[in-house]
Each structure stands twice: as structure tokens, then as C-alpha cells.
Amino acid sequence: MDARTNVAPVIIKRKKVIGGGGHHGGAWKVAYADFVTAMMAFFMLMWLLNATTEKQRKGLADYFSPTVPINRVSGGGDGAFGGDSMFAEDVLPKNGTGGLRTRASDAHRSRGETGVDETAPSLDEGDPLRTIEDRLMGRGGESFVSNDLLRHVATRVTDEGLIIELFSLPGVPLFDGETARPTRVMRDLTGMVARLAATVENGVAIGGHTRAVPIVRAENPVWDLSTARAGRSRELLEAAGMADHRIRRVTGHADRRPAIANPMADRNARIEIILLRS
Image 1 (spheres, rainbow, N blue to C red):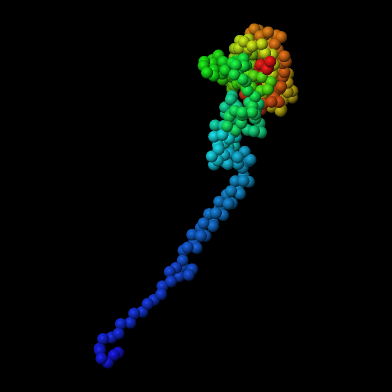
Image 2 (image 1 turned 180 degrees about the vertical axis):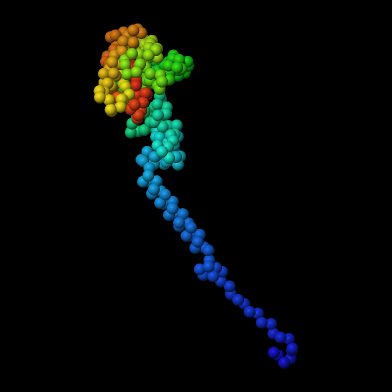
């Protein structure tokens, strides 16, 4: 203390405080939580890869893909990852936009990723076969066929000619049971095709297809049945006015060329009437 004053000196003590206090900090906990979350996501991914089929994985990939609207695959599979997109194999079989590459029908093969393939066979403007197709499907005007019949019809163009496909639907078959007896729908359809085909002189080929039967059957009737149905279709066309000399071939294909992947589906029971290119 200074002898000249009686005021006590002011002493300021500064204490350095370290935030967090070593292991008492919480920043490492955030990093550890992020690490655990990432590991959980990784093991979840590995489990999904092991627990799903290739089709299901493709469906999951398509769900997160921005190209789903133009992807011609199923949107999922069976079980917990089930569900189909509007482009699934059993959807829109009529115009060929659905289906898998591995089991694509001829109609599917003639199309590209976004619709019609520019390299696929086509009919020129003014071609009589194109006129028949347009009248049949109602393009540019009223359809030549009623809506009830039109849902049994699909057309496509190949190098061979214009294929008019007549197919069964669930509950509405073209033939009675496993016989070659045509239903009223089949008679109306063949009559309609005969009237349209009368406007051209092209040759005609007829192919019969059946759906598969269970393998437990002792005798498989698909060959005889498809051939008999193709022959009966020829008789119906001729009875409706088609000249017999125009028929170039009548073939039974059994169940060897299904239109969709399920070989036992009613959609596979069909008759193909081909107006051959002249």
C-alpha cells in the first residue's frame, strides 16, 4: 500500500474457461449418430438386395427413376413389394405398351421405348391394308366394330402383312370350353373381318393359339385344339363370304407363342388372321 494514500489497490483476476470441458462436449455425439444412421442404411440396403428378386429390384429402381412413364416394365412384384405400374405386363395388352422385354409379344417387339418404333414395319398412306386397319380400330372416325367386339381385337403390322388378332377375355371366350365350337362373339368377329377383307384381294393366313393347360394333365390337347380352332375360323370366314382361294395357310401354334407372360391366361387363347402383303 502506498504510504501517500489509504485506498486499497484493485486486483482483477481473469479466469480462463474452456468450453466443453474435454470429454464433456457433445459434438462427437452428432458425428457418431450420423455414422450409426449411415451404417443402418447400408445394412438395410444389403438386406433388401438379398431379400428381393430381380424383378422387385427393378421395380424399386423404376419407382425412383424419372423415366418411369416410358419404361416398359412392371412396377413391382409379389409380396411386400407388390404393385404394378400402368405399364405392367398384364396391363394394356391390346396396344402392346405393357410387358417385359424377356416375354414381349410380337406387338411389343414392334415398338420402341416410347411407343412406336420408327424402324418397325408400317403401311404407307393409301395402302388398302391401312384403310382396313383404320376402319377396324376407328382411327379418324367411327369404328367399323362395336365397342363390345372391339375389346377383343388388336392389330399390328409386320413384314408379312396386317395381323388382326381376335382374343378371348376373362368370362368372354371365343370358343366353348376346350372345344372348337365358336361362341356368338367369335361368329360376329369373323363375320366383321370377312366384310372388311372383302375390300382387298390379299391372301389370308390363319393361326390358332391356345392358353396352356396344367402340366398334370395326362394328355396335352393344345396342338390339336389350336389346329381345330384355326380350321373352324377358316370355315367361318368362308361362310361369311371370303373366297376359299384366298386362304394360303391354316396353322396351329398350340401354346408356344403366348401373348403375355402368364401362359394360362385367357388372353393367350386367340386367332390371328393375317392379310398378307401383295
